[in-house]
Amino acid sequence: MEFMNKITERIDNTVTMQNEHATVKPPVPHAVKIDLMRTCNYKCGFCYHSQLEQDRGQMDFDLYQKILKDLKQIGVKEVAPFFFGESFLHPRLAEAIKIAKNEGFEYVFCTTNGSVANPVKVKACMEAGLDSLKFSLNYADETQFVQVANVSPRLYRQALDNIKWAREVRDAGNYKCGLYASYILYDGEQQEKMQKILDEINPYLDEVYALPLYNQAAKIEREGWIFSGGNQGRAGNPVPPVPCWALFREGHVNFDGTLCACCFSVKDEFTMGDLKTQSFMEAWHSDPFQKLREAHLKGDIRGTPCEGCIIQSKERK
Image 1 (cartoon, rainbow, N blue to C red):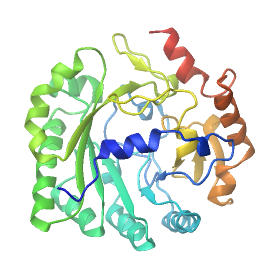
Image 2: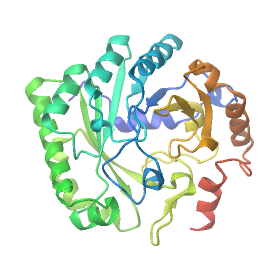
Image 3: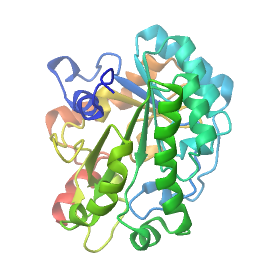
Image 4: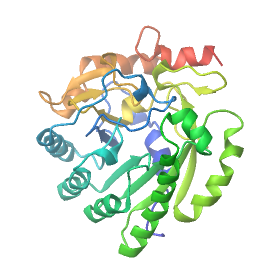
């Protein structure tokens, strides 16, 4: 659809650090992800979510609306009603999207594993004004799906069917919502393994792209997998891991209202502020956040929570 920008262009823009961002008190972030629900029906071996002892929780909806108003007032243009959970498990996802669009955000995006993103839910989200829906399709076949996601193989085909239904829903309603998919390159063979399934789903999507295997804050180990230190963006156009763009360009809000510095870990060491008691910019420019950014700008992250994510991953390659 010609009216849509490529999602890869948006990703590359988000992860690119300009001079104006290279400061301990950077300007308003390019985008903010808000974790409405800390629950996922997958247990993927590559995801830090599978390491959490307590993964259930929902954001208070009044808090969500309060945060949105704050973000809009300071000039954030892009928001996502998801961060660390499976977005389509939230019973009020479409409502959350509509509220964000009514607030005036120009771009509202969402990511899903696809298994519960059925046509009824997808249609409701598109009607609400969703601008982008990205499916995380990280498995070449049912066998790999079971090995990595640790759930029933029927969900694999269910996710694929939902991708196809999403395209039918969009076309039938003429909704202006981009449909995309990403997949993870676990090792040097994954690209070839994915080709068959990519050939099947490509006709239903606007763009498909590959991601490196992120290190997930150094909490995950698996023999044979090749981890990427830090968050280097997409595989086709990687950026340096230090300074980590996520600290300067994108906000991540946990379901409890805390602002998290990391896009892969929600542990306390990455908590930079609390939006229940602070404005977003107060948390964005908090002392802990400034200290962490300063280490990244100096290129020396030893002794910071980021040390394991980047340094250890390099050492074990």
